[in-house]
Length: 251
Ligand SMILES: [Zn+2]
Image (cartoon, rainbow, N blue to C red; front, side, top):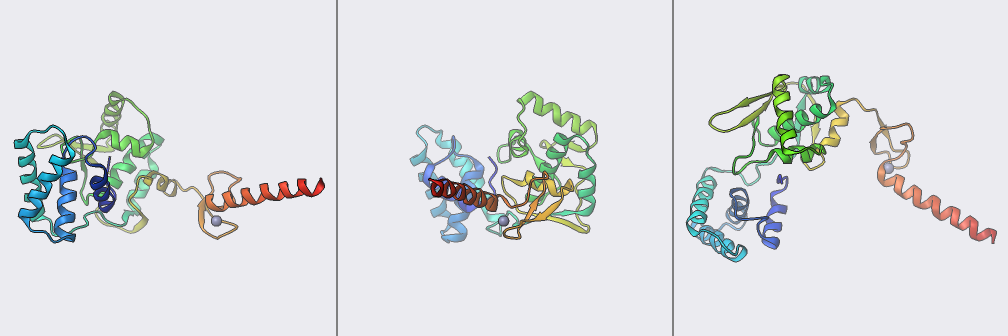
């Protein structure tokens, strides 16, 4: 799972504990909240992290947890900001052009998500499957593409062969979307969320119309689209009510 909202993940951790076992990412989220928001000192954070693990996990290796907490504290010292996740991800014209040129729609989705996640990390690429990063399956989940692990790996191999994605093998596996740029003319701004893939429609030139009821911009994915999803729902309810009334007045 990729965290788009640290505060939400913090609340979720406090409420539900770790997904499986204490990990670097979740411990860092706890530590940051306690450090930047609650202004606790280092020693208090360390002991809070440890008691949190004791409370939430039934069996664990104390030495490993202490080492992990040490690592988290080290990172905390070099982090100067609370929020690392940008509010908007900016796509440049050249990137949009490169992405829209990809004919295979599944490849296009994957490259787009690689770009989004790289921008989210303010990096030129993303690490996969290392301890504190995301998993390959996260990428496919975000794309809405269901594939087995083997198939997912084969996709990466093919994208690499097509020169859409380059790979660093050392020191850690890192993937770079080739179309990624550092600067340029801004073409698109999107909000990081689990639904970034719907933003790909903009890149693909799906026509945008204004909702006939509220004026909000909606994608005209087919000829019947006249309203935004919210208004479409309201209008549907209104119509059903009306026809019911008519029926009743006839009786
Ligand atoms: Zn509307």
